Length: 636
Image (cartoon, rainbow, N blue to C red; front, top):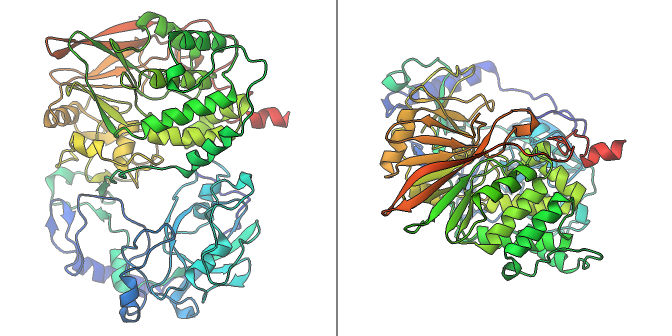
């Protein structure tokens, strides 16, 4: 859904632009510098560094200095942003000098945080400009999309706060007054301490901030947006593409050595204060050792009768599962011993009664029957909470025989719109949504079975460099990858984030892409930009490169519950495990079972099943605008 400009934000001031002649001159100078070609890219200016085909994601911001670097050279070497990260290309600016300002933009913020991920000072230590921000609004009124929707952009500097001119202030004095680091505004307490010498208290909300767009010099203008260049027409791979086609650098951000979540730690403390349940009859969670078959049987029986596990226990289970998941790699390796089997389960989408029926056919996870749950556990189906806690119980019971892949619906944007967060709020409380956001960010993106079978929710890595143009025809196929991605690169990719094709295209490819019959890559109709289809030549090349023999994915409804989308020596198989999807599709569901026979995985064989009767609660009941969503109920 496109981000909407909402009433919470003042419209941006119309900007004064540089004279057209100056812009044209800068463009001509850039064009002269960009002569020649190499590897399908337009050659980079001699005085700059050519962008690599793949690199770690870097900070945003405008390029080049605004004045001579000499006054701040010493300090520039150690400039760090508000998050403590070293600033790759420090800027020197002075907002008291009006000649450095192109125009101003005003935004009114009613909630914290504003959607700016990092600010940085000038090399003088004064002022503050945006180095990194959320470049989208996830849903109408999203507080973390406020800055972007109001017209603020990376490189804009803060000029005034609540009418107070802060142009000459020290960096941390500005940070203190805007206090754009509150992680949970509903808690009513600030999450950061004052760091500035002025000792400023956070300004009251709603807060008006005036941003200044800074003038860039010619080098900065030429270097701006360095990861996007026009296609080189001399490269036969791109000869037939339209004139406005662009190439975008393929970034693979590295995984952190360790991951700690302040949200989870705060909730861990909060859970200790929750009261014990009164009048509850059913299994109690007292750590992973308390889960066994009887626990699962009783819990599922209660779920089918509309009874939940106590809120205190629910929080504990989710926290303990997070602690396990965060220790796993982005790509997990699953060993299936001789004579043992592995069951791959596709999309479940909160269809509890169908899920319970599937378990009666396939059995529970165990050391003899490893399970891989392949994403889209939640959303749309009105029992997503119950399905999710069943999966967590399985993971806690058999952590070495239950594996979970994140799907495209394990994200905040999807959960807000398609029901999981609304369902959590209705059945427990809104605070629990924050915890599941962290659980999903900790969930791996893919697994490999016995070094033979790649299991992923969506698909395989997309084109590198990424190519796009307006009006992209979904019948087009193009060869877009020269350097193949290895399993080790996926294994060490950072997954602790929300899906964003600009920040982590590999994650988006693994969660969102689909196979197609035509060879090469093509655009997907799922989103406006950044998602691709891949042909049989692409999938076979990926598998050959990584010594794999099959890819199992989910993500798409199939009439029989499964389908070989690519056949031959290197097949791509889709498995979908939600029958009669959204109570309308009429499809069967299936799970895939493979057995290690003679040291190699055989199969798969399929367990198919049909939709089961369920209470009269419609699919989408908890989605935004749905009849059981808390906002809908409150409005009655």
